[in-house]
Image (cartoon, rainbow, N blue to C red):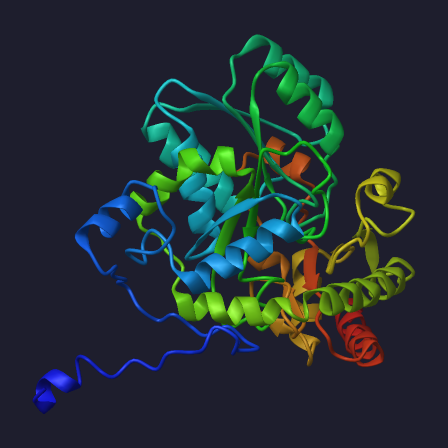
Length: 390
């Protein structure tokens, strides 16, 4: 071969069958080939295993998907480019014109927007209730044929706890499927419940480093079979290098989640005892209105601590700007601690009545607890509270 040809057809380096890499390689390639047209066609028909085009699947991404599925006690998973992307693709793939979706005021803002604006443009209707309104959920499901019940637990940002057993029971009784954003709880929690589709932002706890985005829907293989074609056509594929970084992050997932949750509880307890704080939203506290429900459903209570300052939005701003160890940034679940001031949290798509139901107040602050030393974080929060009272 001449040199211009050689650089496009480098020599293969086969790895012997009994010589395994300890860390799987990154398959940073869009295309795969078989040795014959016949085998290529067999693969495209689903008659033999293998890979053809990265938008459909890739070995690196597939390893991540299988790992995530096993953590959530399911057998299949589809990974996408971001958490919001997997919400949008899943809801688009599962609904059609004339369908009805039951959703909740306390949901993640982009989830509400996807249901109310995007699906609404395609003729999908919705009912939006409080996640605590079980009587309303039963009434809505019994009076309106519903395709999906879309919810999360703990909720963002004030960590309300959904009664998962009750919601799934009502949904199945009335022929609706359940879609649960399980990002706050993590991959090791809630898998024992009869959830049809689990959604996760891989940007958060899976990665852990805050340097890569991804999303995943996890379910039984039979359910994901109906979504696989839609996901491939919509094209929100996770890049294999991002998949590799997320898979690497999962190696420390359990250590991080447990350590950060323990620190979050200590911080919640300190906040609850401070006179500048009107209310702390953390399901690990006995004062949380759904603490007993959280104890039944969860192994750890998570790494998010939200609280309401008596001084309102201005106190929240002073608190946030006085912190030295918390980055003023969105997201959660990474090794560094983060803070969102009231000005960064207030939902803009809710009515005054819905805002009251959401429990987000003028003084609500959200903390995402990282892996810094707990004593340092507590000292930093002390400085913030002093500034809030000034």
